[in-house]
Image 1 (cartoon, rainbow, N blue to C red):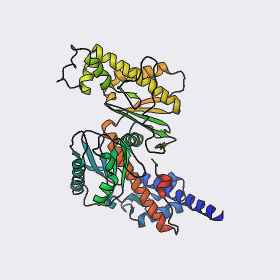
Image 2: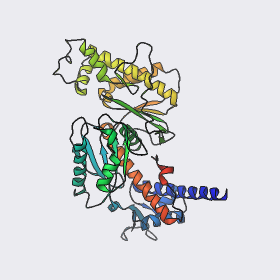
Image 3: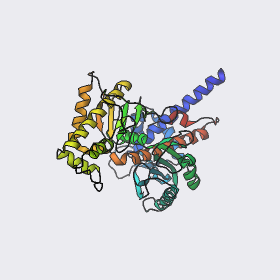
Image 4: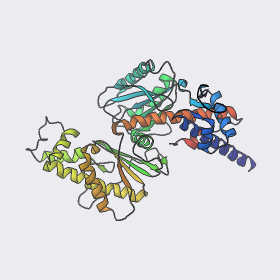
Length: 421
């Protein structure tokens, strides 16, 4: 019993130290701070802040700078603490869009350079080889200044085993059952590689850089495009569940009592393209009927604002059905906010007002979540990968520092902070 109690205390002390290290780093991402500022902000003594900062300085992740002597300040000049961006860079890869996006960023989430890797709809081995070539090319970019690669984070479509990095299901990745990106990129660069569901990372990006308010704790993030997906923030943390596929709600469907689900229903949400194509097939005189007509978001939006009867009817139905689905999800989970992302937001304020109107209409309670629309859109998944690569780099670094500072080697920082946002 004594040994268990000592182990518990050991973990608690290290968790407090890592938590304070993370708080200091997050403050420094907004710019240099004095130790006095950090002490006040974190409600820690100056002595405690000094010890943590000195350890970070010795590890080379922060640098200390004295304020210029020519500044008109009375008394001793303060020492500013700033992140050491020369430590290295982090790579973010977004596989969720038609073309792959690859970015390199600093340890404070600032993107230095990025490049597009074109590929067919199916992501094959050749595409992954091109991504490796692209990363090597970006590492030579003038903005990188020779800094080493510290880690890679991938926003991937499909369901990924959170322990092994194997794909459980990924129809856009060729031979996905026998391909592990963690091993592939890890062998190529010798750095940690983390794989996350793309929608989960989009949700994280909206939390850190987008429309989700900073203090929001319970959020449902719905991606509605030609395909759909979703993610959950519960009690301020990304909820991944036992198998890593939580939030995608593939079997959660709320019927409005009028019809059975059609192939317009994917992952519990209705998308515009499937339902509209069904109507177009029945109307040879419709502008979208001809095979040469591309059913793009822009085309549908123009017809919608021109009050095209078919498009208006379908979008009204999409708004109504998704409002019912979102309301049921909100009442099941007791949410603060619902965030909607994807091409469905491209139909403008007219559609957004319609969706919210139906949501309010079907609500039987005065207490309901606020519906928000993404402010990041296509950039969300990549920014989420940048943030999470950054986040996990710091966690691993603090875990290594903990091992160096203590005599016990079984402290696993990711066990306690792995889904830290």
